[in-house]
Image (cartoon, rainbow, N blue to C red; front, side, top):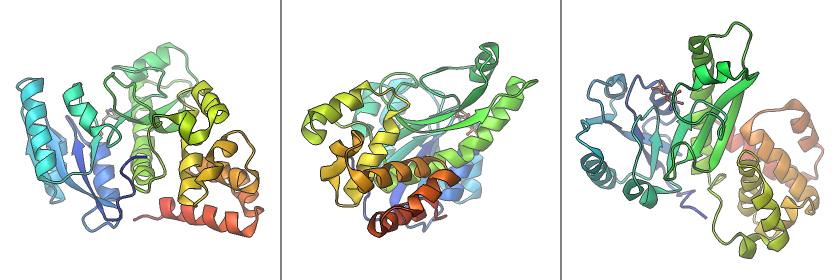
Length: 296
Ligand code: GRF
């Protein structure tokens, strides 16, 4: 179910077109020598991008591939990723749409961050549109990239309030601060094997009833259930994945759901509930949380 965990530090590449604050957060979270993964390559379609400068300042290889059309860019980028033995590609403010030729071979190992609560507000001028729509809440989404624009399966979302008097600029800054924590966390979940896109053949893997339940979930609800599944697999209890989704896996199921919530966002009430679970479940849950929360 996806290539992660690798059992060695993953080699990360970031594609960025502009100022690169998310890139900075990713290089900070995944520096050279980090046991989970390290950013080894930054590629930009824009030779003037501040992102390239940021990479150089940290001694990370920075390559400009000036845009001369999609075919040329993708060919060169694909070759470079292979030559540098990259395991995971992260789009961070990368303003070009990638074709199936790029997306298909990298599916499951190619992430993007978008500054809205997808599937709402895909595309451009997001904060302006959020304000015009009178939303009370917005956020950011890390998702697997597929062939659409901002459409692939969601990996992780974070929320912030929209406040009276907000301008697009104020809202953008608030969402950016959220993103600088959200993106590294999403990457950690993926590299630890605690996130994956919905696999093919759900019926065979989960049983018919649980597969039906999963298909009925909204795109925003699915990542939680996939984390429950991933946790049970990591705990050697994948047999309980289907029953857990249906609420029929007892303490293991409850432990997996509480942990899956806490992996996305801390919540004192859920943490307290987790501490009341039987010892073995509790120990597994706390170990999973420690892995994701540890700075390395
Ligand atoms: C971020 O808001 C990201 O969600 C979007 O583009 C912006 C990039 O900002 N895809 P930065 O270049 O990382 O500062």
